[in-house]
Structures are given as structure tokens and as C-alpha cells.
Amino acid sequence: MKQESYMSVETYSSAKQKIEKEIVRLQKQMKSLRVKQRRPVIASIVKSMQDNEITIEEVADAMDKSARRGAGAGSDSPKTSLPPKYRHPGTQDTWTGRGRPPRWIIDAESNGRSREEFLIK
Figure 1 (cartoon, rainbow, N blue to C red):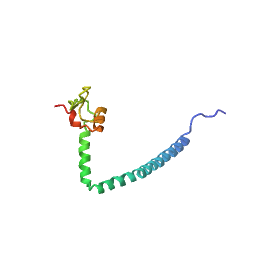
Figure 2 (figure 1 turned 120 degrees about the horizontal axis):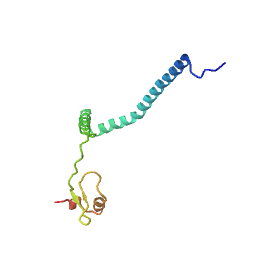
Figure 3 (figure 1 turned 120 degrees about the vertical axis):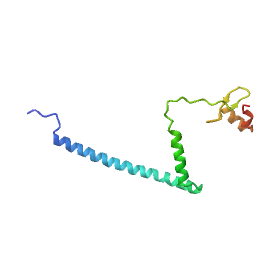
Figure 4 (figure 1 turned 90 degrees about the vertical axis):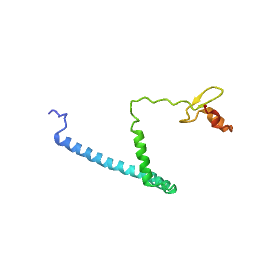
């Protein structure tokens, strides 16, 4: 007698049910892990808010502003470049004053020089 190489409907349904139950169990486990992971982060945020006397309203307002600022983040409009604000007198390298300061600014400040010395007037 020839063995059938396909799965019977009953076997398929049973296997599918077992897999679906396992998926539900794993999803619950993942949710539990997320809650455990987030708990200390939330506690830290609450403590920082209390230490700095920050209200929930202030956080909500900051989140709203952040969401509005981020709304256009994926837009296709090209970024406009800013004019330079600082210039290195020797190399003529420039910096807009935004983002991480260039090495020449960091080095000059560590040697006691003022950032204002490099302002473009």
C-alpha cells in the first residue's frame, strides 16, 4: 500500500491549533519581559521628574512639541545649509555652531581660548 505524503485535514488543524497557542503564549511572555524591562526606566524617569520638580504637563507639552518638530522629518524637502558662525584663523575651516564642535574648537577651548575669538564678524 502506498503511503500518503500529504497531511490530513485533522492533523493539519491540530498542528495549526498548537502553533497558534504557542504564538499566544510567546506573545504574553514578550509582553511580560517588556514590562519588566521598562519598570526601572519608568522609576528613573519619575525620580528625575521629582528631583527637578518637572510636572506631567511639562513633559506632555515637550512631547507635543517634539512630535510636531518630528512630523516633517521624513519629508522630501532638502535641508538648507546654515551660514558658518565660526572660522579658524589659520586654516580658514568653518563651523555653523550646531552639532558637535570641530576638533580645532575643542583644542582651543582646552588651551584656555574662548569660542568667541573664532566668531565671524
